[in-house]
Length: 423
Image 1 (cartoon, rainbow, N blue to C red):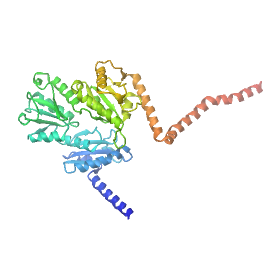
Image 2 (cartoon, helix red, strand yellow):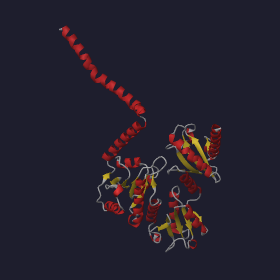
Image 3 (tube, rainbow, N blue to C red):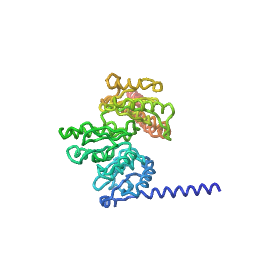
Image 4 (cartoon, one colour):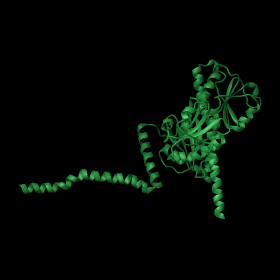
């Protein structure tokens, strides 16, 4: 009876999985003929043998299930069967295709992030707000978005619109008239651009004088401002968003802890991470302009940065322009907001010890460290396979070297004996 119940549950589970996956269309090379017919596509290019693709597949099925009532069509395409349609730079590659435009997804492969990515690209770069209650809905739906306030004309509006086209895959951009923002935001002059972030908002500093400035300077400053403000105050840093954070040209302050397979953090490491977050929120006005903060749950990312294996938790700071880094030398578990504040001040005043960089010597050592780390990880994961992969080639190489350098030594006595006989 118990086995029968297990079988029924298994069948129900397989049916649910089948229903979920049915929302993701299996595409072929015919996709090239229909992709420009006005449909919007979210497509994952994969290979059946790819482990990363297999891990991403359940999440992608959930995305297909979530957006199937919208005008977004979700599909996947096997790159090994249809190489003519291959768009793979890496596996898997996820694209949003809108007419002749293709946008590569470069974020974390989570259901929420993928859905946000697709929804951002579904509409225009700047979405117009026409009702006051829509602002409250936006605040409830998004922790971060950009908002242009004023008439949709003039140099600032044109540059805001072009900037939104550049960053549309990474953020939400809206526009609203002045009479709809009452009781929502404090605005001194119109036009204005603000970023709403975690229940607070900040202003683009040159909005009021943009009409007097060189358009090139307005474009550069607005681009840099959006590029820096598009991150939360204390985001989780992953392999996918790390390079984007490095483009802020700030010091990147990273609290390094270790998550288990269930994304749980030990109590003492969680306390350290919370200490860092509380400290940077306390001193946000002081450091926001020059520092971007975050935390890492995978210590291997931090090991690659500092080229050393350090116990967790710890605190590192990276200069995103020079790739130099600083390490918090005090005991993290005995640290205080004052000691962290003092550490950041020493970096800002350029009195803290500097490590790393981007010189030829450092790049060479980094390559050696990554190779050594990969070999150690391989050995820890599967020592038998590591011995087979490296032991056999080294064994053959040693035999070849032995035959080259020692073969003449073995033959030399025989030649000497023959020469003596002739004499």
